[in-house]
Image (cartoon, rainbow, N blue to C red; front, side, top):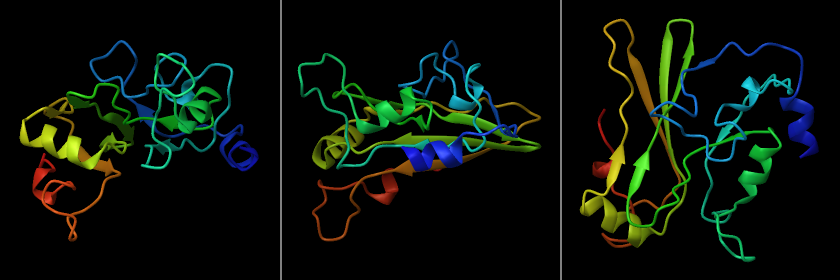
Length: 171
């Protein structure tokens, strides 16, 4: 945390504009106190915004008696050291909201999906229960889509124990 605090916090302005807010259709930040990116927090000065999804060794859990799933990244996000996105709280369907970023004329829709059990995610994908919210379609704006995914690939694992490249949308 000390390294993150040392290199993330600072007085310089961030040149990236986030088009999401917690009241919009796209609200990807699950751990943020107000649903916005950490550098937009009024009482914090962030130089280097970091956007992160969780992996299979730090996935959210309800161990400890809590009602909400909690991951290590939740703690880093609540302290405004990073922006945690891509967490799926429902086990029967997946809806992926993009982080909509703009710097100058460049528009990026950053999609994220933290690790889920391979068999469960594969079954949901086969049952059309994985949905990607699309970036707004404006005549003036073109959104370049990127997808951050933490899952196993199809390398001898079997057809149901992975995410196949053909499952990922073309946008």
